[in-house]
Image (cartoon, rainbow, N blue to C red; front, side):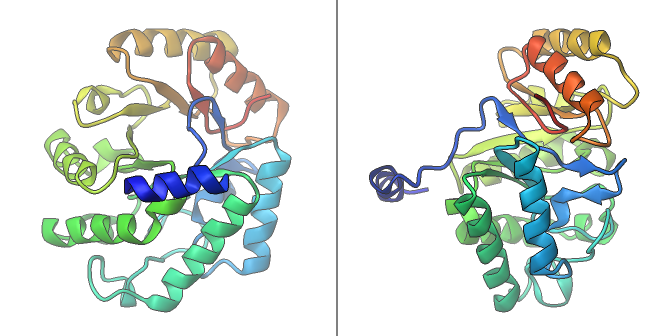
Length: 263
């Protein structure tokens, strides 16, 4: 984002919220509701607004959203491109709908973390490098004014090498000054050690107790070399008391934010 846009946001009181200590809920109803998919035009506006309201009602001040998704969860597939050809001709009607939805979230005083890739998107994720970089450039050009942080991908080690993550993160850094994070499969954090990654959205795995969540947080933070850890995935129903208790445990262990609920 350019300096004058930052100044304008500061003067108008429309500053993007800091991700530090953020609260989000990207899974509810035992994983049946994937809140990350609500940018999809296959999700009606009424449903979209209901999900935003439910998240805000759970005490959230941030939402995690996929920019594109091929298969993972409801309302898929979707992208900003005609016929979902990644990096191809942009669909102006879909882009307008994305902007309306992103603004609605911001009007509700919530921040946005935009996830650039989903794990169950085999065709999207196999798109050649040139189109992938065009996709990243398109996303930043169109939506950077709404976004506080970007994630290279969810469970990125499932479909991307560390070298590929570094390449795309370095490319993204040339486009934006926003926080650039990574998410891996349960217990993994090695991609976050790359210099181009700002922080780790950590997946603990499910069915863990408070002590395990807290201890895992402490242990992984010790290995991150001062980078922040955001407790991204530890429960399937973020608006339940057990989920919130685990989120609290992660924060007690030193996490800088949570993605599956907390008090």
